[in-house]
Length: 490
Ligand code: FAD
Image (cartoon, rainbow, N blue to C red):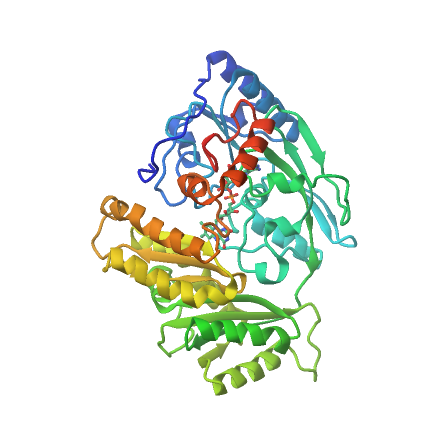
C-alpha cells in the first residue's frame, strides 16, 4: 500500500489464537468484538481508500477498565495493537500494516461526556467522543471548544489529541495540545496512568501528557481528557477576499490583528484551482465572488462580546478594514457574509477541499510549515521544483496561512492513474521536503507521520532527536506492541 517506502518496518506478528479471541470477547462482550472480514472492512481501510491493512480482529472496549484488560492481555502475548478513533487521519497512522496479525482497538464506544464545568471553563470527556458533538455540548453551556477541522463530524477527540490536530482556529487558540489540561492513558503494559487533572498550573516534574499528544498512538492509548473551554463567540463576521498574491495575504493578516482588536479567528489562504475543484465536486457550494484571480483569503473575526445596537460590531469593523485594504491594492474584491447561510457556504468551500480532491482523482499533498513570512517564497520555489519534475501536474495550494501551514497540494495530470503518479512521488517528495528543510520548516505541520512519512522523519530529523524518540518508545513499549511501525522504525 505504501510502495514509496524503502521497506516495510518490522512489526510483531504474534497471531490471535482461539483462546486469546475468547479472552478478548469475554472482556468487551459480543458487541465489542468483530472478526468477520466484512465487519472489519471500515477499520482496515483509510479515509482516502489508498491503504488497506490486515487485522486479526477489531476490538471495541466500552471503558478504561476494558481497554486496560485488553492491552494487558496483548502485552502478555506480544499481540500488536493499532489504536483508532474516527479513522480520518491522512497519514495512515490508524491503519494496520498489511502484515498486522494483531488487533485494531477502536475507541468509538467510549463516547461519554463525563463532566462540563462552565465556571472552570473545562470539560472531561472519553476519547471516543466525536469532535462535533463536543463542540455542540460546549455551546449548550455557552462555552466554546475551539478545535475545528473539516473532519469534525467523524474524527474523535482521542485521535485529535494523538495527532495534535490543528485546523482553522489555531491562529488564535493553538493546536490540540494547547487545549488540554489533563489526560488518562492506558500504557502498553496495560497499566492506567491517571493524569486526569483539571489544573492550569502544575509544575510537578515532567509534563507527561505532552508525551502522548502527537505520539499517534505509539506510546499508549488516550482514554479520557480534560479539555479547556473558552467564552462562546457572540459576534462573528466572515469575509471572502480576492487578493493580489500570497504576500498580500500576510500583509492583510498582519494589519488585521490590530484592526480587529485581536479578534482574528481564522485566516485561510486558497488558490483559485482549489476553489474550482470544490465547486465542481461539492454539491450546493457557490462561488462567493465574481472576480477570478489566482488567490483568495477566508477571513473570520469573532468576539465573545455580544453585539449591541448602536455600537460598532465585527461586521462594521471588518467592512472598514476591507475598504482600507482595497485602497492599498492588497484586496481586489471582497464579500462579507450577510447571513449564516453565506458564511456556511464560504466555510463549506474551504473545508470541502479534501473531499473534492478525493473525488477529483489521484494527487499528492504535502502538509508543511515554514515561518509565516516565508510562505510566498516557499510557494514560488516549491511550485517550480515540482513542475520541473512533472510539468503537467496541477497545483492547488491552500493553507492555514496564519500558522505558516500550507497544504501544498497537487492533482495528477489529467488522465494519469494512481500507479503512474506514484512513480513520481519519491522525486517530488524529496524536492518539496528538501526545500522546506532548507528553509528551516517542518515536513509535517499538523497531520503527523503515520505510515506516509515514516522514511521522511528518519531522513530529516537529527540522530540526536531520533535517539531520544527511540529511547522513550523503548522505555514505555519494550515489546513494541503499541502501533508498531508508525512514526519510527525501531
Ligand atoms: P484516527 O485517524 O483514527 O487516528 C489518528 C492517529 O491517532 C493514529 O495514529 C491512531 O493510532 C491514533 N489514535 C487514535 N485514537 C487514539 C487514542 N484514543 N489513543 C491513542 N492513539 C490514538 N487534521 C488537522 O490537523 N487539521 C485539519 O484541518 C484537518 N482537516 C481534515 C479534513 C478532512 C476532510 C479529513 C478527512 C481529515 C482532516 N484532518 C485534519 C486529519 C484528521 O482529521 C486529523 O488527523 C484527526 O485529528 C484524526 O482524528 P481521528 O479520530 O480520525 O483519528
